Length: 85
Image (tube, rainbow, N blue to C red):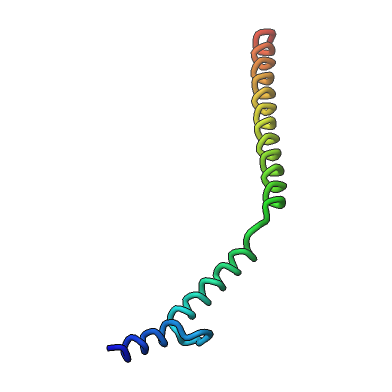
């Protein structure tokens, strides 16, 4: 019984052994975390991009309002022209 437990212990907890189940899993997890950190954008660059995005959205809204205003003015002038002509 003790021999079996020691064998399982050695299989699971052998330090730095690449074939040990837990150590391989931990190494994979560490590698995934490293890749995640490398691919993540830092807070300050993200904030800068968010501000740029928000400014572009605001500019789009203002552009839409201007187009609508021009459309209304064209409609009004067309009615004036039709009334005069």
